[in-house]
Image 1: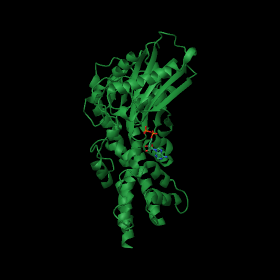
Image 2: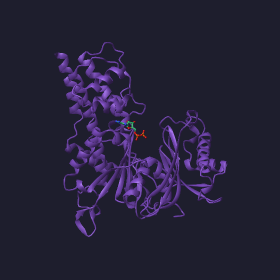
Image 3: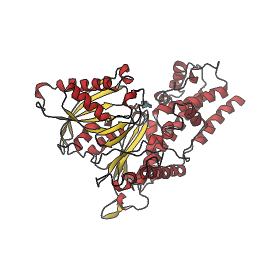
Image 4: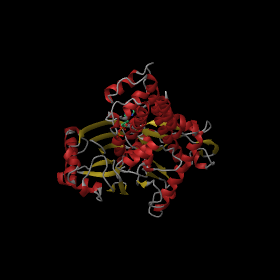
Length: 472
Ligand code: ADP
């Protein structure tokens, strides 16, 4: 009896610690907008890096011609060819070749990696055969999605800041990524121009904008999380005088590193962070993204099991960090059987903890919901923070957010979202949509549309190459 009340207490304290009332979310919205401003005001002015991308022309569907793309950012590497039909036709043809990156190339020397990339590209081009529209000597245009932290120096060049995700090629850090590719292309004799170097969130925004010109921002919520949006050039204070374009530029927020004292943080988050390889880093990401949600649940459930005295020994599988992956957590959360059969199965088969009572399993489902709900609502607050920064949240009567000539009418605003957590986890998506509507209120919410984007990291680079191509 006493034991059970301990379990209930753990769950209740967790719920209290994850509180995200609309009032608190509005504080997060304000903090996001303030930090965005600070990150744009000066280099290092905020935990938000607010990186310039030099992308000042987003594709709008009028692009025409054949463009190539490379996508490097994880375990797979892709080469794409996209045929754009011009206004009203969109993408008329798309060819993709996907292959794993050989493990030894991820930690070797940069020449080896780029020779591999260039020769994959050459094979891809050669497979076009006779009917290729590129006669000998005609140069092909290429967009490169390189999803590692890069300091851009132009729309088509940038310097690698550091490797992540298992890559570690030391001689590459500090080098221009496009230059490495150019040298490898020249070595192999392939006539291609690197027209764009972007990260995956920018690719997502490009695809979104290509489909719908009211798209102003892109959010990625998969293993990690990031966001980018279109900012007015004169609001990018840290580069005033440097930027010539008058319209606007895509800013890569690197929002996974956002932090605010208003974020509802629990002891589980603090411990997770302390034991991570990057403490005090990526604080927002650690509360929101797919890499961490299952891990937070694991920590809470372990505490519950200890309280309930349900562990037969100390060496439970549940003590292994990251063993409870987010898709498993989602499967437990979405278990709709009356006696939670799926939860039982996961405890038995994956965690090797048999005979967990039904009332305990019910609380586990509740914890999954608490963790996902907090994540989704904080992501929602982040999104509204962006809208606030660009005057599209309906507050303050900033004329930009209104239809010109009719100041009483809000402008339609589209946010495009990509990533496995958002697309594959229904409860996450529902909590996010609900929170955005709740924060904006019923007068403004109908003007803000959240759309799923697919495959931004592939096609996006080809589209940016097209919109920035000299031949366009
Ligand atoms: P990545 O972000 O790794 O490039 P994705 O956008 O496909 O790739 O996101 C994959 C992530 O999405 C996984 O790491 C996982 O956290 C999350 N995810 C995938 N499927 C599900 C699912 N069914 N339920 C919950 N989360 C999922």
